[in-house]
Length: 47
Image (cartoon, rainbow, N blue to C red):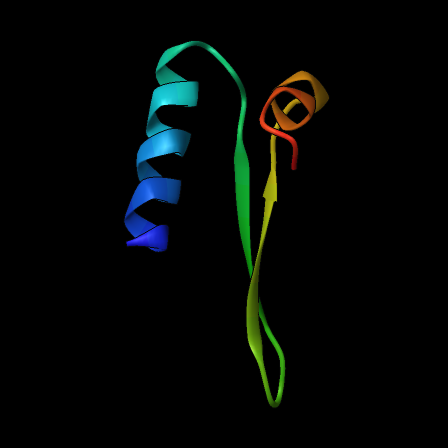
């Protein structure tokens, strides 16, 4: 459920005109994602 809500939030922010960058990082033992979005959005959502 968390993943779906996160994707939904990203889609809404993109429709509002915010630039969001998602970057996948594959390492030998782990996979991770970095999500960059404007500081104002992070502060407003207490991230």
